[in-house]
Length: 106
Image 1: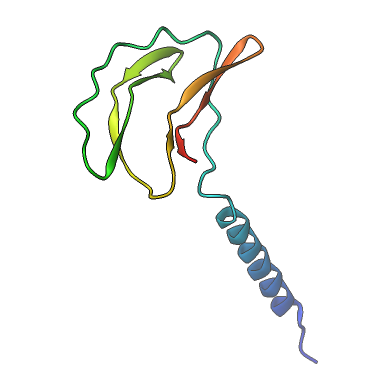
Image 2: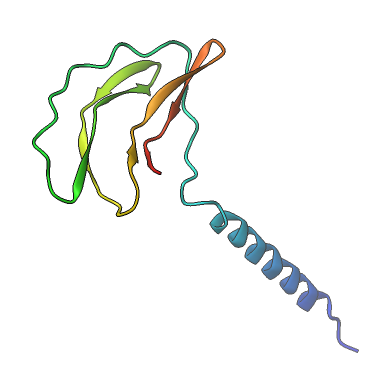
């Protein structure tokens, strides 16, 4: 009589691998790291938006929390998504901290 133990072990290993892969790929594409800063960002810098560009919307500059301090990121163009409007990213106070809400199409 042959042992079925190696086959069961291989089947269990394969099942675990497939489940792990499925769990990793089931995350929504919009899932992003939560960014929390312990202090308010500085006031936004005055940034002159370039002339309108067909098929794009200007995403204003912003303060990014990086390595324990705020760093300015200049604005950039976002390709337009027909039927949507661009909601710029912004900081929201949550208790004593500030949380970054990523810009998105709505």
